[in-house]
Amino acid sequence: MPKTLNPLQLVADRWQPSARFVERAALACVVMSVVIVVTGGAVRLTQSGLGCPTWPTCTEDSLTPTPAMGINGIIEFTNRMLTYVLCAVVGVAITAARARDPRRRSLTRLGWAQFWIVAANGIIGGITVLTGLNPYIVAAHFLAATSLLTVAVVMWLRAREGDAEPRDVVPRPVRHIGWALVVTTALLILAGTAVTGSGQHAGDASRDVHRIPLDWREVTQLHADFVFVVVGLVVALWFVLRAVRAPATPRRRVAELFVVLMLQGVVGYVQYFNDSPEIVVGTHMLGSCLVWIAVLRVFLSLRERGEAVAVPQPSGSGAQEPVRADEPTPAGR
Image 1 (spheres, helix red, strand yellow):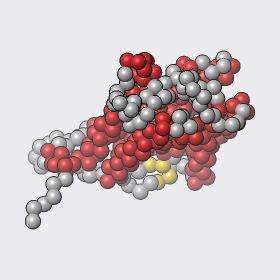
Image 2: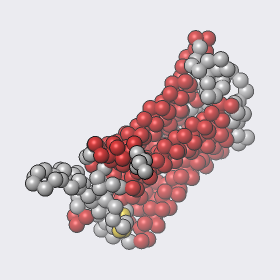
Image 3: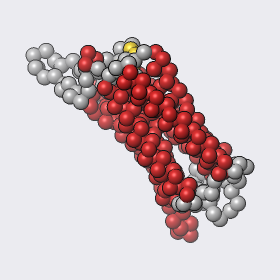
């Protein structure tokens, strides 16, 4: 009976990507995940949320925007098309992870998880249009995009390390602070979606878009309260890491997170005291992604899984894949 051909296996039989290529493919997924969030925000901030008034086509009679729809139709449709670019980038990451030898199933699974999140969020985006920019669906759309960013970051960081059992590089109570930081930041992002759903930028100025029935200033205050808690946890974690003489990597990651938080705080205050100008709101959305990435990097730096295994070379070839120079060995951490 003929053997069933697996397209990914056929690629793996003919192409052997380097560890750095897999890592860069995973990083490209992170970049595209951020781009999708920022361009999605641009759709809302330019009042283009219903630039294409239906889904999956742009109008009842046209797949693409018509000249009569103007710039709003172009902006909304362009954001839809970027989803296909994202799918292509994720596809490259999946293929590279599958072709890598030795095979790392964890990376392949993370790649496929991104694919299914993209597919699900595409449907959520369609529901967003069909429900006339319902703020709760808009919030779900953003949270799904954040979930995609989470998986993309985890894949990127996992591509830089091995598959050994995780080993804490700090005492267990310090890991608990890391968990508290992740949970509190997630609540901060969730509060941010409530600010968006009740705030001034509904996404379309041509019709009455339903808003979350909350005072956006009070919700913004709650959002700011979470910021103070997150900053407090970051400062506490930095001092604790110094006290337990933690390796340099987690201390550096915490310092990077603190800088990102301070910059994001400045943007947030400029946004609040200047009546939320569109360009500043968009910058704040970009900052939200950068904060979340930095938090995940802090959390995952509190444990290690060894070095990635090099590709076995044919005997006598004398060739070896270069060792990463920018990452310390387990003994040196």
